[in-house]
Length: 165
Image (tube, rainbow, N blue to C red; front, side, top):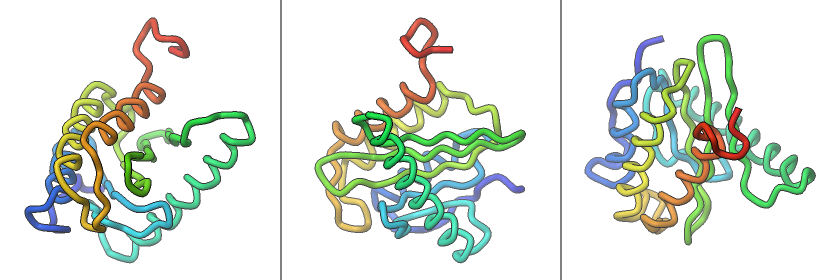
């Protein structure tokens, strides 16, 4: 599978700039920002629009299932889903802010460099917080970055943190 290539979603817009930041991550193969119903707002690395649409539908379903399972287990925060394969890893992170929730999907080579990912996602949070996403949803920088940081802390706890392996 070839590394993700650059493309156009909302040229010059916040979403386009955010996706370009993710493209620079070592080992990133595919990425997408979508709403909870699975509607794609922007993506990179998919060989066809059909594959991107199918993936987005599956991601939305997985997130909804994971969210419901989390509720049944008494969790109060949105589900964060990390799937590890032999050579690939997927992350589904909810992006909550004042507007409607969004989902970020990443397909990367495993293992993922948690610190590089954290840095890129913090930058994505700042970029997307600077303006509206293509759908017209306003996302505050503080809310977006807080959501990403919280997701990463839960997925990649630092040594010495509670819940750290």
